Image (tube, rainbow, N blue to C red; front, top):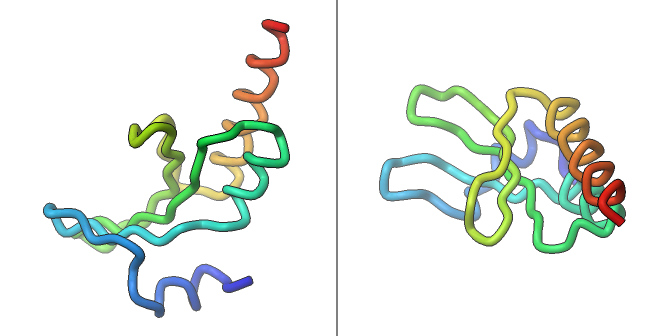
Length: 87
């Protein structure tokens, strides 16, 4: 699996009309799937000012944006917990 540096050296998977560069973050996407949170994908986004954020997307809508890996992982855990408390 590529580290962040290597991932960002590869071409982005998507570039938005606003110039944001998006790379699919496989490790966090896999973590969400392991929690049975289907339809969630994780991305690393480089903004036009070179700032990096991590984003979770569900049904083509951003549901979380954080600056750290840990922030996204915690959000996935909280989402999993909230969905399982309802059952």
